[in-house]
Amino acid sequence: MAGRYLAIALKEAARSECRFRVGAVLVKGGRVLGRSCNRRRNCSRTDFRHATFHAEEMLMRSTAARRGAVVYVARLNKAGAPLLARPCPRCQRLLVSRGIALAHYTTDAGAGTLHMS
Ligand SMILES: [Zn+2]
Image (cartoon, rainbow, N blue to C red; front, side, top):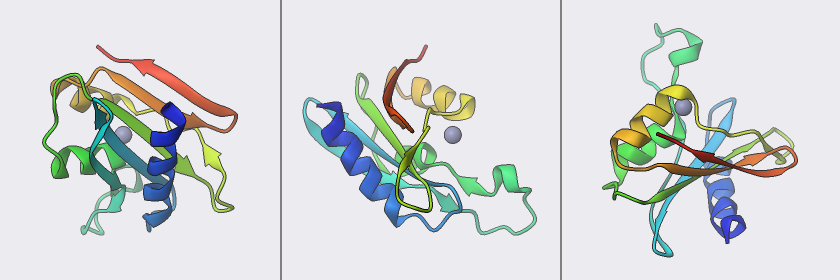
């Protein structure tokens, strides 16, 4: 089940124009509520650590979050293989604030699960 939504997140990641390509999908009750990839910010003066909106941030901007929804996050390397996409602390705080407590993410060896609080 997780694999199906991670596959959608991987497709989103493939659309990213960032150096680190990440995609995120929000799912509740078997329905995809929204999907996003990370995006460059328009400001060239920000340092590189804050130079992108993370995929989870884009997802929360574009999708009406629902309590109890599950987020799937995927990252691709240049060759198109999955990499570790565990949500960062900033995104974890954002997701929890929207009532999302469960994340599934790609790793270079498969998938991982994160319970957030
Ligand atoms: Zn993040």
